[in-house]
Image (cartoon, rainbow, N blue to C red; front, side):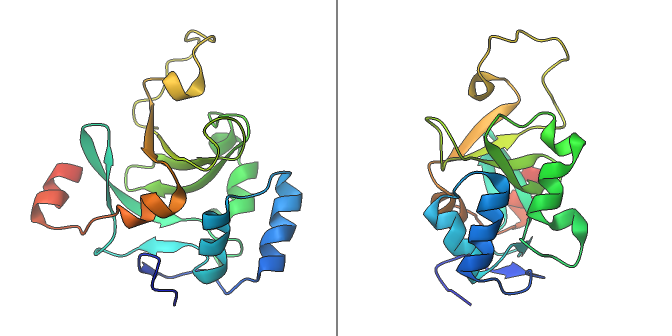
Length: 170
């Protein structure tokens, strides 16, 4: 296992750079280099208790899973998640849902525009009301939070789930 990434459990089967390139062709966007490297080295999985807590605004949340290219469970496959109307309906254009937290909020990676390669959080527990001002950019919505400037930065910032973190995240 590549030690530059946080530990993951129940990871997806090994993939090659060619597998990731095929997914990019299917998606119609090139993935950021750090996220591509993560897929080749780890290929998603469940977050371990040693690397799972992240900050969302003033609160904390617990990373549950990151999708893989070819997990045994179709629910955790990147392509399947992108085709799901429930997942896709509130995603910004050109963004990829790459995982979720324990509350079902989505971890998102924009693949286009000025926020390309950053990691964002879509709060599905407190979503934007239907019919809200359509002129508000997706990154200015009250149910969207920037988590990190890159995927590698997001992963490096994950903290252990301890008693204080567990109570703060719940």
